[in-house]
Image 1 (cartoon, rainbow, N blue to C red):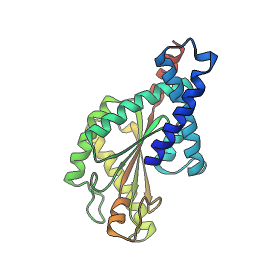
Image 2: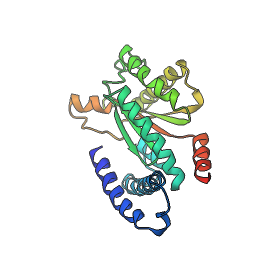
Image 3: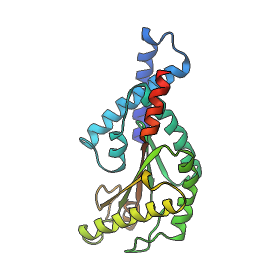
Image 4: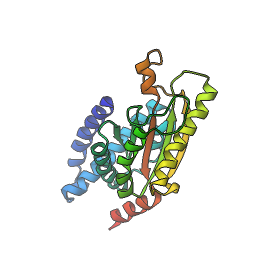
Length: 231
């Protein structure tokens, strides 16, 4: 997460210097310049991270980068995602919120969304924490949310793949029961793939047992951003 922030800052500084020296932007206001710089920085950042992840990428980060619109419309979307990311962070401070490109990667570890061993049923703590996110998701209704379930390496890969899918589905189903539209959600079980910590220690395995969200603009937000640019 720190590396992503550092890359973003470096890119925005270089892009900002480039844009403020361009004749084409001399007659724009500060807001318009900010959107243009944000759009260009987001596109460059997405390209760098995309290359590091491989074509298309995997998991939540890959989904976020795969949804890049680019241009000034992308900058408008990015501004809206900035606000949503801040509200998510305020609602659930323990979550790992990463703003990149035109979307949000949200990581909920076992401290936020916990399941009983070998089960996909949400615990009371998990429901309480998901409840904190629901007002934000309702406020920013024009987004698609892809939910990825992960496990540690204990047990067979086949078993963990099935369990992770069931857990991702449990999260989706719970959010839908709270009034969020089911059409906003997709789920994917990733099993033991993409560990973020070592599986050789209890602490590492706990970090790997997680749920990730990829929050991206839906078609309505995209079209509104394009219309806003035209106007």
